[in-house]
Length: 353
Image (cartoon, rainbow, N blue to C red):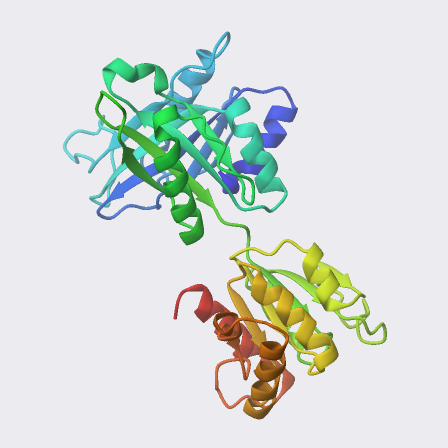
């Protein structure tokens, strides 16, 4: 949904009805992965893609059909299945790459409003929707729940699915993975639930407006990170030195970190090389669920810093999360090379390398 969220909100603000198609499973080779989305409004305008063009005409037609049926009530979602196309039958819709995909087509309504708000705000969020249910529980089809931590799992799928649904949602959002899961229903067969996980967009918080921070902020922006630079020293944290960052904060780093949204997709790079800034900032960052924490300094500096953090009550498992000396060892000498080494380490940590 994130890739089409802006268009969906714009169309809905204009009073247009909208349907969204989402890839919910893939088998074999497919042009796009699970979570790929296409949106269509009542005028036939489209945004996004579920297959790169192979099955779009059929998906759009089904979306328009649901829109036409949504005049008085929300129609049940449809799950469409597409396999390899038959070269001898030009009327058959299918994939040319030999794989199989299933596509959920749904009318956008109040069930999706909370998700759209969370995506617009850059929060991590998850939408769970029942896409298949036993005949005796067909009334569950289309029930959905939207969740944005740190709020509690809201439920809403079915009472007997709340515990399993909450566990699945937490697991998938933590891993940043969307998938369908079969969850048991009391006295009936299982329900198939699609969990669409939307991790927060990647962000980099740079503590210390140093000479390394300047090229680091530029590289991070090229890689699609939202960049915030924090430094209490007004002479360093200036718009002239950092014209392209998303946010420039002149305040104590630990205070800023307590205010900023810190997610698993957030990286924090400590570059001040000054204990009065570094240590409090590290204590806040290490207590948050961020995906990366790095701090500049030699091995000797790092050992002294570890001792200070330990004396301040920071647990050893948190201290062990610090990447220091910061950056991958590529023999970097210049600020630009050091920035490259740091960003490479952030990307490696993101991918578990």
